[in-house]
Image (cartoon, rainbow, N blue to C red; front, side):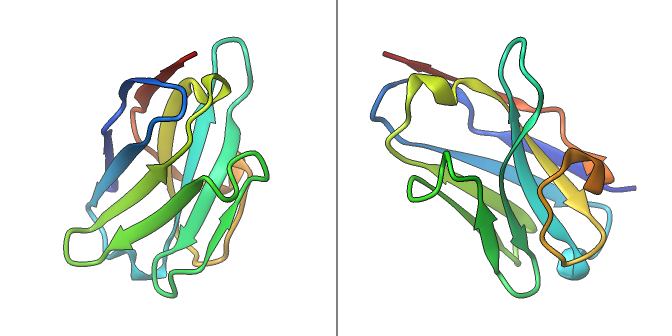
Length: 124
């Protein structure tokens, strides 16, 4: 059973940085892609970025490109989302998700497993 646990959310000011973590367990994730999504109140869940666990290849939404970086630690089975230059519009619940294929994808329906989410609030 795949288990994903996000952590690292909180309240920060515009311009600050924050690093989210996603601890993954239950499988060997070398053939997986790990995605980050977010959902603001009253809005649909949207793609933030994704990393192929084996190759480390990444892709990002245009809204976060150049500010957010995804990385993974193979030894710790953890994926990170480093968020810099945060804007108030980045306020959302951030979710980690896993798909059992290394192909990068940006739709929530592509992912089989989800964490419970972590709240990020950016004040102006």
